[in-house]
Structures are given as structure tokens and as C-alpha cells.
Length: 338
Ligand code: P6P
Image (cartoon, rainbow, N blue to C red):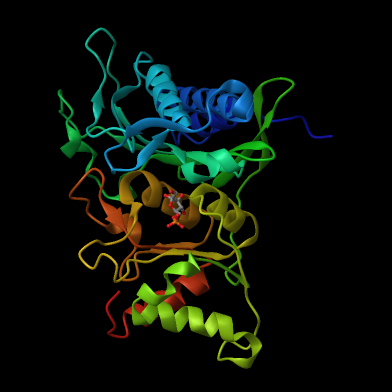
């Protein structure tokens, strides 16, 4: 049986044999992975850990925070502030970025995260996850601010997520394909269980919150109606639908067996570009999906080429099997409003 490859061995190979990543990035990713392990332990305790339910506070998005949202955010901040690899961090749960305190050495990277995505699923025991993205601090910047995070997704040097489900997994890219690690609970180590993940170009599965159907703009309505028409319609085959309402779970399924994930902007908030956040949901997931051979657009352009203007900027998301994303994007370019 092939010897097990750990996350550290995987990253050392990328660092040493391929010169793809500096040691500081390897060390940063190992710290983030350890923090995700601890978040997974807190999540797995459920009611026994006294961590279910609301925290009684709201986050910058105006969403009520779950106790585990706060715990996950604090776990990532505490794990990463002293290591010397980061200049600052930004989180869905914090209004502004967090600069590494003067008492610790600063590094050259910026870390962004959604500490616990899919929080509405926490109390009903459905898979949730942590999403993270790594950028470089722009050259010559001594005092990082929110503005220094405002880089397009193409500038990411690493991205990934942990998914806390039937098993706990870490899915990661440093720009050389996508690898999946499964947490070995006996040894506590992240063990490589899949490498160079590829998303099939075609699929029979789509993911969208269909309860918003009456609010969709024409391109999305046309695309989904064709899927629902199945073999009797223009697509000539039947499709299946999944919607976990946890982006990490839906994206993990797509990386595993293909599919398309959609969260379009709609008529409920015509001035808003969408619900999901660009910097710490859409960009890291788009990096993973593209590295696995898939595609990711906002209906009009590649998500990773969007030039952010705000830290908590929202975006429409169509990502997954390339042929499907290209089709629904072409419908947007046929002149209808995205
Ligand atoms: P809805 C979770 O709150 C999240 O940000 C994503 O993880 C998920 O895909 C989406 O929102 C679910 O949104 O409107 O279906 O609850």
C-alpha cells in the first residue's frame, strides 16, 4: 500500500521540488489547517459542547451570528496572529481587516476567510465549512489597510476550504492543481486522499435556491427552464437538482462529481450584484474550480478578474462544469440583464 502523504509532505514538495511556494506560505497553510482541525472539533461536539444556537450578536453583513461563527473566527485569528507569516487578516465576521499586532513579527501575506460558511446548517447537523484565501501584501506596504486586500482573484497564491461533514476534509490549491486531504482522527494528521482533482466538463446536476425563481432575470430563468425540461427539452437529457445552502458542501460535491452551482443576482435587490461575498467565498472557490478544469463567472465575466472595490463586496456566482458555466454565461451575453 502506498505510504500516506501528509499535508506537510505535500506542501514541502511544492516548496522544495517545484519551487512553487516559499516556506512562509507553507507554514501559513499548515497553521490554517491546524486551526480548521480545531474548528472541526468544536463543530463535532454539537450540543454537547454548548456551542449551538445564536451568539446574540450580528456581523458586518447584518446577519445574526451563531456561537460557532464567533468561535471559528477567534480560532483563526488566535492561530494566525503570532506566526510571523501574515501582515493582516480579513474575515466575513469582522467589519475591517485585522493588522498583526506590533508585538508579533509581520509577514508578506494577507489571509481572508469565511470562518464558518453555511451557518444556517449548524443547528440541523448539515455539513458546513471554513473558506480561506491567501494574497500577497503589495510591495513596500508597511501598514496594511482594507484597501490592500482589494486585489483580483487572479492574485491569490493559495485558496481552500475545510468541510466539516461525515468526515472532515481540507481541499487546497497553491496554483498547481487541487488536492484533497482527509483528517485521520487517530493520528490527527491531514492525509492526502486525492490529487489533481478534475471537474467533468459535462454534468447532470445543478445547484440553485429554486425558491427565488420568481425573482430571476431572463438568462437564469431560460437556463434553468431548459434543465427542468429534461430529455423533452432542448438539452435532450434529464438533470437532477441539489441545494445544501452551504457553499462548501455544494462546491465539494461539484469538485467530486461535477455540476454547476448558481447564486445569481435577482430582482429582490436590483442594485446588489448578488448575495455571496467576492473576497472570501467566490474568489477562493473560483480558484479551486478553475484549477480543477472548471469555470467561474458572475454571468458576464470571469470572477477572478473582477477588480474589488470593497472588502465585503458581493457577487453573482456561476461555477462548476465548464460547458454548463459557459452556456449560462452566454445566455447573459445574449443581451438580457445578468
Ligand atoms: P440561501 C450560506 O449562508 C451562504 O453564504 C452559502 O454558503 C450558501 O450557498 C448560500 O449562502 C445559501 O443561501 O439564500 O439559499 O440561504
